[in-house]
Image (cartoon, rainbow, N blue to C red; front, side, top):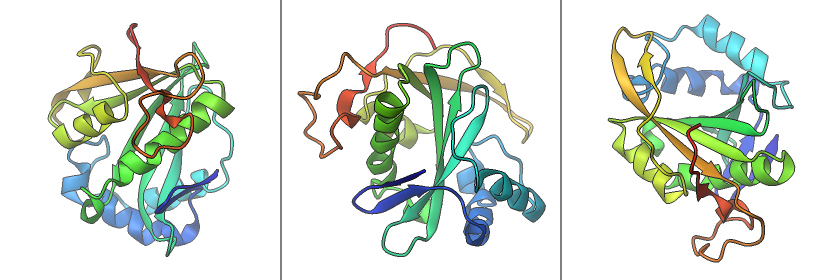
Length: 201
């Protein structure tokens, strides 16, 4: 995987990402709405990067995590994950994490449309959903702006950190093709095709 936006690169993980990866994975503010426990051990980070660095293709019933890096320096600032459903390979789920010091700079809004375009146009994915903790208002609003529609369905997730929260699953569909007439956000052609789905994911 290698996609680039105005300010970012979406690529495979590399071994030199480890320290930055461990730093944001061990930040309580980043981990607050995620499913990993704290502390996040170095050994687990090493194993994660070892698994992901050579993974190229999306796999049914499995997650693949891509590194999000600054275009100018190739510095890791977060990751963007994608899961392909086991019972329907044309449906996917995405998730993202970003180091806290890079919040509120529009990076997620910038990079997610490129992944959506890749999924819809290149991988023939029909439907993408994103899970968002109902208390994570910033991520919820970002997903809304990207064309995801909130549906209060599904999940009561038991996190490894020992508490339970409700999740909101936010689906979008690829649309019927063509260029999004409402795409005035500077997105790559096709990325603006995200539409609110009308079925539960």
